[in-house]
Image 1 (tube, rainbow, N blue to C red):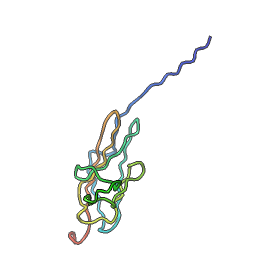
Image 2: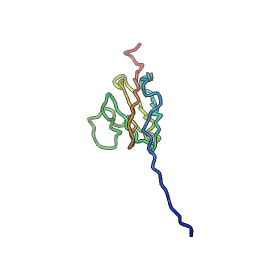
Image 3: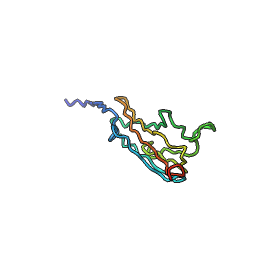
Image 4: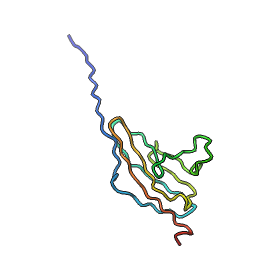
Length: 120
């Protein structure tokens, strides 16, 4: 007699972000586009949320015209990349990606410096 059993082991690995302890300084020329990359991993694959100065970024999916970032940002590659278009000096801030799964959470920070009239 042969009995078939299906064994399923569920392994969870906390979300991690490569070089999370290092704040990357990213410089961009005013009115250009910049991309921030969140090298996150984990099992299950983590979800990614982007923040600006510790506040979640509105990706422009709603009609909140009060958000200065609306229409300027786009999450790409399942959230692992943040595109900032037509960057202005006012966009300088600490940006961070937050990778989260059922086993844990980790953040990666980026300091955006905009090279414009103020820096000349």
